[in-house]
Image 1 (cartoon, helix red, strand yellow):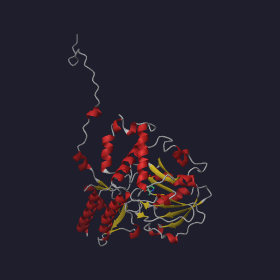
Image 2 (image 1 turned 135 degrees about the horizontal axis):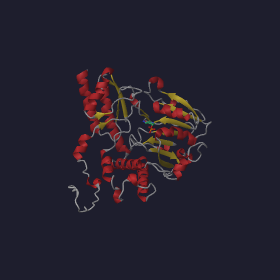
Image 3 (image 1 turned 120 degrees about the horizontal axis):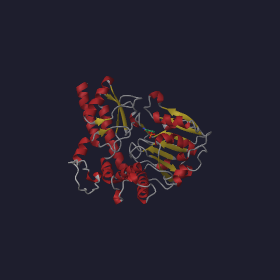
Image 4 (image 1 turned 180 degrees about the vertical axis):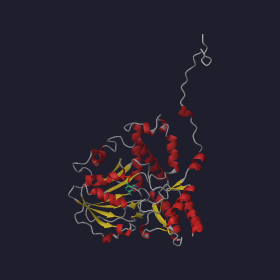
Length: 393
Ligand code: PMP
C-alpha cells in the first residue's frame, strides 16, 4: 500500500478563525508620519480626529455588531445617525424649522438642474451672477429648464472680482438670483450677499459650506457638495425654505424632486449612508470646536498668513483676485517666473505638501485650505514658499 507521508490518519479539529479580528492596527505614530498636507480642492483633507473616530467605529459601530456601511438605512441605528447629523447641522448654521435639510446624491452639479426644475417653470426668468466657472456651469444647465439671464459676468476680467450689488441690473420678474458663494477654481468669495429685487436668493456653497456663520434666512436655497469642508464625496446637502417645495415641473425625475426627499426625510431611496455618517462626525467636530464663529477665526488666520506671504513676496508670487473678495478656502497664485511652477509643485510634493497645482483651466498654483487644513499646514507651505523664493529669486 502506498504511503502518503503528509497525510495523517487523524482528523484535525476544524477551527474557524476570523483574520480581521487578528489584524494589528497601524500604530498612531506610523499614521501621522505617513500623512501629507493635502491642499486638494476636493475631495479634500478631513479632520484627523474625524478619521480616527471613523476608524475606531468602522468595524463595529457603537456595539451594533456591524459597520455603518452594512446597516439598513431604515434601521434604528442609521436613523439615529442621520437625525443627529441633521440636528447638528441645524445647530451649526442656526437653521430654523422653516427650512428643510436634505442629504442627497449627484453632487452640486445635479443641483444645477434640480434648482430650476423644482422652483420655477420653463418660461420663468431667473438671474445668474457669474463670478467663475461653477456659476457659469449652473447658468448653462438652467437654460434647459427655465429662462436664465447672466446679469453680471466676471469672465472678461478672468473671474477675479465680485460686482458691487448696487450695479446689478436684476430682471424685474426674475424668480431667483443665483450666486456661487465661493468659486473653487478662481478663488473668489462673496463676503456679503446681494438682496434679490424679486424672488429668492439661491447659493452654491459647495466650497465654503460651514466655513463661517451664514444667515440662512437670507436664502431660499443653499446647496453644497460635501467633499470640501464637511465629508467625503457622494453627499450633497440642500437647505431649502419649505414653502418653495412641492411645485416641481412635471418632467422632474423623482430623484430630483425635493418634495419626495423632504417627505421621506432623505430616505426615499438608499441614501449615501456612510458619507452621511462622515458628515455627521464632521458636524460634531465643528460644534466641539465652538461652532462656526470659531471655525471662521481659524480660517481667517490661515488665509491671512498665506495671502500676506504672497503679497509680501515683492511680486515673486501673485494672487490675481481682488483683495476684498479673496477666498479663505481656495487660494490661487502664480509665480512671476512661470517656468518655475512645475518645479515648485514637485519640490512641495517632496516635502509632503500635495495637490498644489492650479486647475487646468487657469494654471499656476492653488492651495485649498478648508476647515480641516491645520494651521501647521499653512505655516509649512509659507515657510516652503519663502525658502523657494530665496533659492530662485
Ligand atoms: N460648485 C462648486 C463651487 C464646486 O467647487 C464644485 C466641485 N468642485 C461643483 C459645484 C460641482 O460639484 P460636484 O462635483 O459635487 O458635482
